[in-house]
Length: 183
Image 1 (cartoon, rainbow, N blue to C red):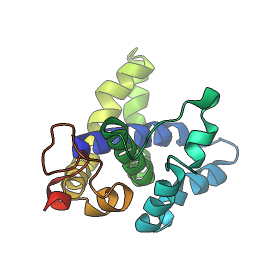
Image 2 (cartoon, one colour):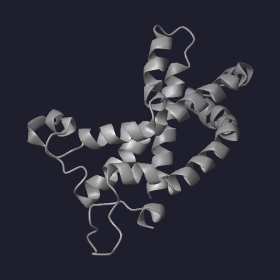
Image 3 (spheres, rainbow, N blue to C red):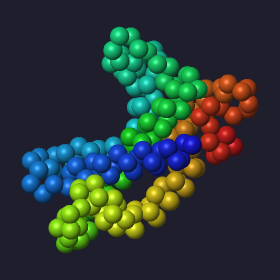
Image 4 (spheres, helix red, strand yellow):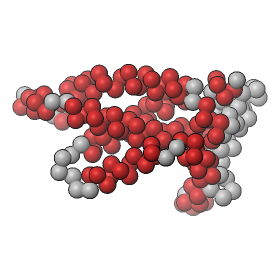
């Protein structure tokens, strides 16, 4: 569930950002791209430790920013710990998929999408029938590799939750343990 969710959300958000930033006349385009690449430029283990502090129950900034005292036990409740691990992993990997998707989008010949529009296709049909299949040729191997990487992503689990908290079924494995962190 962890590997699938992390790859799905990272790719979906990265593709959305790539489509948004694939506008030639957009103002401040370089600034937006630079800001969105920051999570990818900073070492992952360092960002995981920062996120562990941000999600802390006692002094974490995330709970302080939630309206109306909606404190969440991000790292100490089994459900919220799973959500936080997927959320942080997604945050760390969205820039990668944004860069890959942006490059793949820019390599698609504009004649193909233009021909589909001339034939009467809507923007959604052009994306679904022309852009996405051509994009998946480039991105599919990277999605598989990213899934394999996240399947054994020890750093994200161990540095954020250390595999905990204890699972509700009282098993030996923690609620956020994956095979490698359990081992």
